[in-house]
Length: 195
Image (tube, rainbow, N blue to C red; front, top):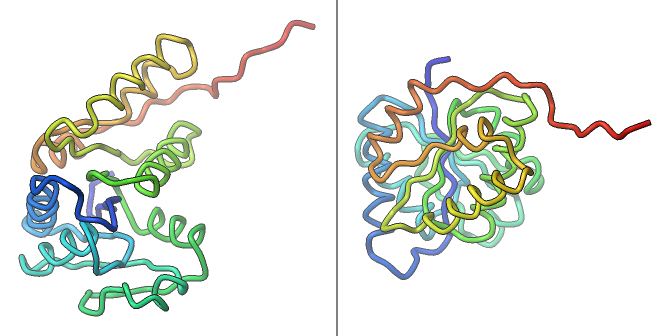
């Protein structure tokens, strides 16, 4: 399936390293340059606002999905191509997934990781066959990658499912990998218990 829209998960904070902001700008610009639509959480703050502003400044289309509670806190981005206000976080994640052909996680906190792992789980279960990846800025996700390899070694994740998560240090590298992505087709991993 061709990638026409990319969902970006990232922090509502700017983070401690200026490289995170630079990567968000580069990713927003790369998405726009390729004529793709950016789908994200709708915020005007942190890396969320940065990636959206960069895509908009580069002439891209940006769709934000934000829960009413966060819109009420006045952190919703007012300058997007389209901003959809939904009832809650579950509705936000479902709508972002529905609108997106691929998923990328920039550096972020608990929400970023939760969104990434949920959409990865959906892919593992065969609910979608969309690519997902990490933009590994200054080794931000290096230790996570080591832990993921560990859970494969311990028999909790199949190597094919581990390989579903692409890794790139540069936006264009990651986006090109997503264009070549083929989702594994495997039976569900369920251990059969002896009778």
